[in-house]
Image 1: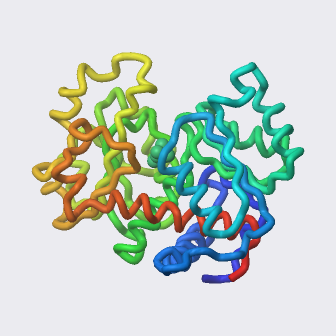
Image 2: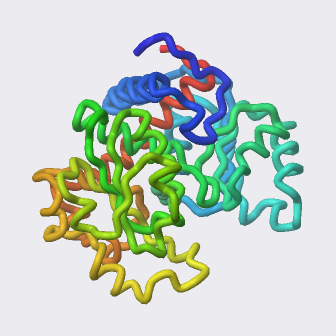
Length: 311
Ligand code: CP
């Protein structure tokens, strides 16, 4: 770890972060993971700080791991329940966050269906904001925990071939990963049906694009499946789930096209039997549950760094 400070920073996406800052987050995550392996897992470092989790879209992993991370660092956590809040009475996001801010919040974590909502929270509160997923735009903490999971297993992302398969057009996870993985020197190929891969991804993100699963998986060190986001499909972009599965499913058979022992990843939640078969998701090649546990360590590292924690 070097002397890089992230004190007071927002985390909207990884384009604002240098490769050195990303590596530093991964190194602090390694320390947090070691703390998580101890019998007594808590650090007193953020005692007196108050963190608000503001999830206006559903979540299991991201919200629970942020709350667990904050608890492990001894911060107070207040959870904004969108479904029982005054948002349901028509209160605006601006009024919601200025109201919360009057209660003395030090940092906000927001998930929202609208891209750009983290910037709105920062505008009206002046406090650091971490993006826990905004629309189809970005999910930087997911990308950081994905990169950490690879870094932990393979030591570096530099020169790795990473294939990301599935519903690219609706995925905020893929966009943040493309930015972060490229900064760390990986060669990323994205793959899915033509209707689920936006034009110009290669020129915008510097990745490779293919519509053929076998081509995408060739020589891959890491293979990541993405969730088919049925709730975001507003038009029939593919004939049927069966048709998608026939051509793009990750299985024990199709993974043979990648390198032997390639890491198998998925950000979750999974549609088992659609984008990935249980035989592969639950196999020894899969690091999907490592991704979940690493999410706590990575989010601890981010809260610690942004709120000025000390060991
Ligand atoms: N990967 C992810 O963001 O999962 P949740 O929607 O459960 O938080």
